[in-house]
Image 1 (cartoon, rainbow, N blue to C red):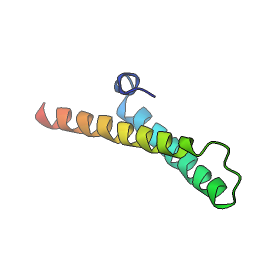
Image 2 (cartoon, rainbow, N blue to C red):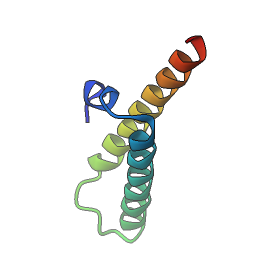
Image 3 (cartoon, rainbow, N blue to C red):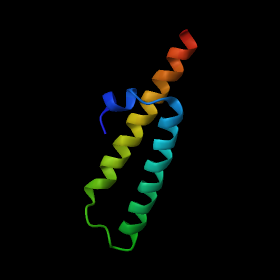
Length: 67
């Protein structure tokens, strides 16, 4: 997911998305542990998506603080 798409979402939607991504990362790590992971590159992609969501949330927080 691109950062420009994330910036269109509200803070509550971003928090929901963050929860979904963390759940997906947990499931991927579990699959990796039992050697059933099809695409190991997906773990890195999900981590980057989590970082993007956290960055956009921080931007929203700072913008609200300045306002």
